[in-house]
Image (tube, one colour):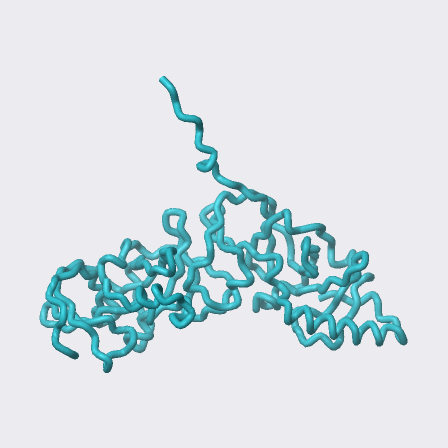
Length: 177
Length: 159
């Protein structure tokens, strides 16, 4: 008796994710999107103030190689009550360094459900979708969703101003919040 | 109200929101389930409370009682799981209801231009005149003006 070959399309696709906490809320991000994880204390000496940033969620930048990354406070971004952050995710292929409270664990998701069409706000840019883990629903963030093109343009302007100021007075070593 | 233009009977689910009853075309109703944990996460869609998990599917929860009766439900006995269609995608939504639901077969009278946008038509049942709800007007979704023409037709179509 011949059995048909196993259909590979039925094998569930999996993705490694990092569960992280921001103001008591759990989020997930693809581990492939996170280039590096550092403690806030570790980067404090390298962060630079952005006094003219018009974005509440971005108050500092950091130089990495030949690129300037903007430090985004995830709590402010999501409209949550900010708490002292302890870790920073440097997100691959973005200009975002993300301030978070902590990492819960690394795990695997087998299913990513697109956000319902009922969600029509900014969350459509924030999230790739939702996943269910251990009978709980976790939003999976979009690494590119933390800073829009418009926001990046504003930040570049603020960075230019900060660079001009720092030419006269050195302000490196900001307290990252 | 205008005179009935359709004479064929259709199936409707009667649902209770507080003291009032409303109807949905049965073709849009998937299931009636007991209330379960609501998962909340940051979003900017104020009409939505969060999502519920049902058989592995994450379904947005939207209380439509306040829009229809002027106050939120005191008691939620069930969540009615209904579907809406956007392009080829079936989009589920959970609606808290305050009582048992009932399946009936009746004729629907079309809504008139004077009716609210959420009224798809009218039913006469058990001495009551009952609004047939148009979910797309009560629950958030893609703006109809942004939808391609065939989809606008769908949004207006009677089930």
